[in-house]
Image (tube, rainbow, N blue to C red):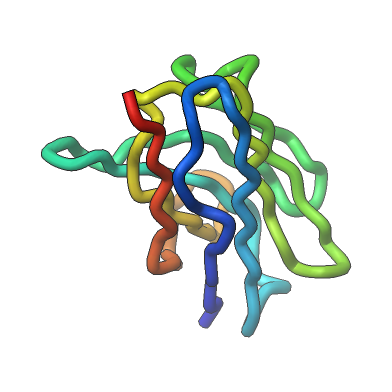
Length: 119
């Protein structure tokens, strides 16, 4: 089992920045990649970004490319999501997730942290 705890959400004005953190514990050695997803009210959960644990390869949703950056600190078992130039449409509950295989589904999920960007 892998436990994930997100932090860093909050209310920020449009154009501002936030950094989300996701601390992993438990069987973290089994982690292949970690990612961030988000779900806005009335919408389906969507992929935001992910990063492989060993090589640090990253991928992003088109909607956040150039504004968000995912990174990891292996020593702290923590993944970060730096969010810049925030827009009202970035308002959502942001979830951290982990998967143990290269092509498999995300197996573990955090409880989420709310990000609100007023229009």
